[in-house]
Image (cartoon, rainbow, N blue to C red; front, side, top):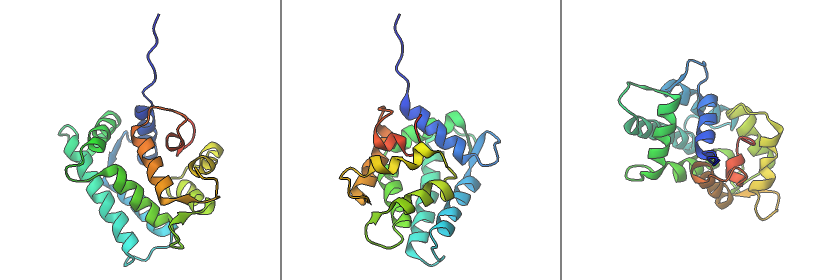
Length: 183
């Protein structure tokens, strides 16, 4: 008897969909992403004219368009399966937007409120608890795993590495796979 290894990337993207589907209607649309963008701006105290606010807004608008471009034609909303498949396709198609790199940098820029090119545990907790509305203790503890050099801060490079692991790694224990807690 053979068993099939779990598709960890699918599980992670499914978790992202569940978090994004704010109203629980089984679909994600632009309004869900606009709410997410508004939370970034509010939580990290970005003024509407702050380049980081414009950056996160512009990134998510392009990100959303890439998801729609890679989804089967079905209007302006995505079901769970369409969302997962569109993410898989968009994450490897860098012809218009590299969503993995762009996502990591745009989010990092918002979190790095003091501009020191590192994020503190508090900044990371704000991302999870206040922006993504995730409070699982194992997700909060992920900060320690993301801090590869153990200096108590997550550098931009460490965070971008985690973004790559989130989108591409089938290792459920990779630090980036744990961004929102254990699967």
